[in-house]
Image 1 (spheres, rainbow, N blue to C red):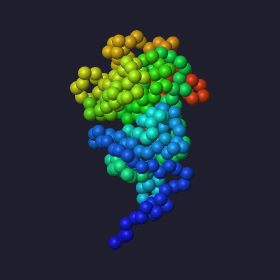
Image 2: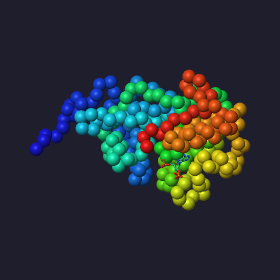
Image 3: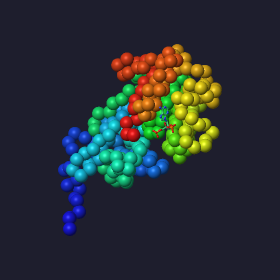
Image 4: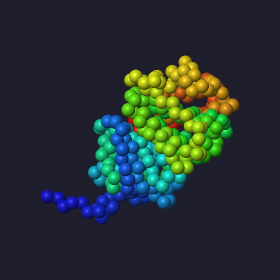
Length: 270
Ligand code: A2P
């Protein structure tokens, strides 16, 4: 029989130059979605909306994937929202983590879904599908978002109603939060739609933009490059089609080095 692994053995296997953090909570939403929170290293700084490389030791090798940080930059813990892929090299293991387990994180965060990559505007749209809501979960909890914009519209589209729960819980948490509730006021709007079940709001966001229903539902005018800004996070096809709709309306894509009217990032772990 093998002797149980000692803590020293485990510590010795952690690669050099990465953070090894402790899971503090795990919540499962569906068979495919879960959220976890973990400790945040004192020296780890990031901008709300960025992603980091998250990993686990699988056997004697670390496996990493890019994960948007879903918690805001002021939070003392780090939060992530993940899918579960049955045979996924990382998520098949990650979905089994429990409080107290160790998760690895590379030291440098990065990403384009940051407020600095947008020129000043009045209304900020955040378009997401599936786990693409994660970077926006960070940004809608950051007071700076509300200093820069008068109105923040978070759209989230999933196949099924149960997949929207993370977003609904998040908005509810903000509205009852000790200090965020006041900072956010009535600036945050949440527009959730599903594509494969009955729900008051149905359809792909791209269709709802193209046919004008999103604007009618929200009671806002069509996109105007003078005041509207956008951030997009979803699958490659969703990014491409949403980007085309914004470009048709006269908005241009920006980056950290060249701020403009909208920015995009793929929801990596899919
Ligand atoms: P649909 O059910 O019509 O495919 P997925 O789970 O495949 O990542 O999809 C998440 C959500 O994104 C689903 O509601 C899906 O709608 C929608 N979606 C998929 N492809 C696109 C696209 N090209 N543009 C907009 N939405 C999309």
